[in-house]
Image (cartoon, rainbow, N blue to C red; front, side):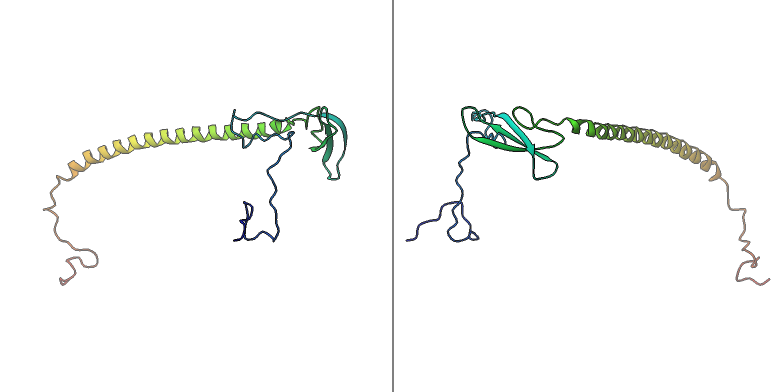
Length: 168
């Protein structure tokens, strides 16, 4: 019987493919997928040794050394952000950029709410005016409905003064 391949595997894997192990060095911090509070943080912060331009434009390479080790960690940071003592510096520039956008969205929402309130008030005023007009029409139409139509003869209409079937 053939031995089962090491999981995970796929039928599209090339022959002899060996999946990578889940080994991660101690200096990586993976808080995104860890259970909150259950695992201890194993991140050891290095110190900045040197900073040099990167081959990729717009970036700078920050070289950090781990304490009590000869291991070096190279991290690429944006030029405008730069390197700090234990990692890339935090850029607070985006706060200034998006502050105006958030303020404009809030002002727009306030104007929309004010417009809806004004529209609703106008609708209520027009509705009450329509009710008053309907009431006035009912009062006026009741007096007109008492007029007798028996005095009006079938006079026809022009050019048939006496009616369409009568002779002139």
